[in-house]
Length: 315
Ligand code: RUB
Image (cartoon, rainbow, N blue to C red; front, side, top):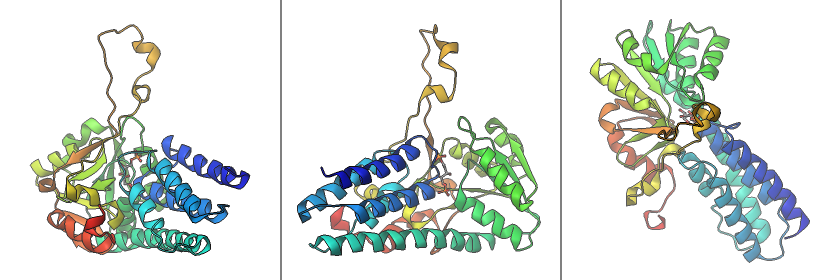
């Protein structure tokens, strides 16, 4: 391996480490960071043969993808960015750089579009409940507010990493009245809510949503109280490989995020579980707001087929 390769690999590893440690988090941001990392890696890659170029890109891709297993935006981004057809190193490099820049630009525009499309479904005076910290969900909420709708938000804390605190800071910057609640107060407050809006880490071909642990409890409580459950998701959050029956892996994080290991050191009969995401079946989802319009979860397949430029034979 040449010096140039290892220097570039170092930068890529730093991004991977930030994703792993959740300094870079949220499915959309993870995807953009991965696209940037691959672009920069390809840009500085010094290799002598096309074979070497292909191997380096393949290894860098697998390395990034292995950082967090659930957010499908990550493999989708890497796959879209590393789709090159040229057998010439310089041309292939250009293709990757172009793909990455296009992906990043589209991801930013997608958030804007989701905000505009979703905001039309929000009514003046609506009380919105949200969970965790989704930039797509927040785009809808802040756009509705900027459009003059007098909304307010109930935001969950989102244990154990408390991403809800990022959400309340963001909403506060816009001047949106917000109430912070603990996750277990979701059902208690659902009667006051008009609409629930959450983001997505992945959406399977049958419309099942994978999002921050506890999302399915919001969906159940909303269903019981006959409140609208809306998902905000860019098209690159849909999972192509679920078409052929692949299951989305739920990331299991360290128990240290939940409880101080010293406090439980002597409890030999205890195990602590910390799944980071859960599944919400399609039947609890009223609509998915994507950058290409609002869809019912029942037609998730169409998004995968038409907007992820995937040939079915490739999966
Ligand atoms: C974040 C989370 C978010 C989705 C969507 O989980 O579950 O709801 O990633 O976010 P984590 P966005 O904090 O573990 O990454 O809309 O910003 O892509």
